[in-house]
Image 1: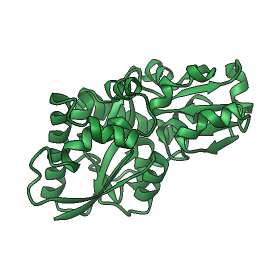
Image 2: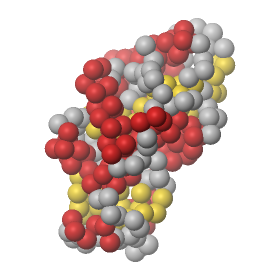
Image 3: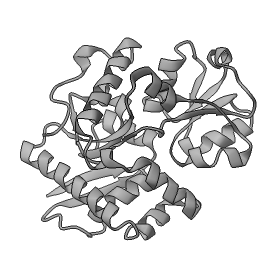
Length: 278
């Protein structure tokens, strides 16, 4: 059985999928055609139903729920992991709606949180997530919403944190922030979806039990990232929710969707049930 699989080059994704991609666990007669991309491209692939299994922003899901379900394994979800608004200079909260802000994609959870926290912010410009710091430094924008490893690099470039959107979410809801999850085509057989869920979980469990096994694969896709940044990235984004979102994670995802509806990101009717693969 051959399926297309798409995820990002970020260390947390390459870490958790290494065992599947590089044959460290038995995947039976499954064969994956792997595509690596940034989150904005991954979201676009899902929007156009071009991939069987794909990493997406949770905020995108209401737009694709008629075509995809979510796996309970492989998610990026937790506390202290949220996007940050950064800038070269101090920007006060009442100034954010008037600022030119770089975002890592229109349908990202980062943009959804920005909209939730600052509904009047209208000057938002999509950038490749890894280019946002440079866009700020080059005065292309006044501020930017950063995700992934940029959490560990922005201060070294002289940039300042304006707001932690993950902290905003946690104080608002008391829940961990659901950033991204693994989606699988809804029209696949239920047994196939359940097996895919089990494979991803086994891959995550192998990675956590053998943290050095994926070093080569992670490094080869992390480009110029420093080893310490890679380790910190994995430690931050791969946690118990990555093994299984559980009831707490499912409640957090449902709450995110409710907030999406509240701010007009999606309509209740958009979300097809069941959301998660059993």
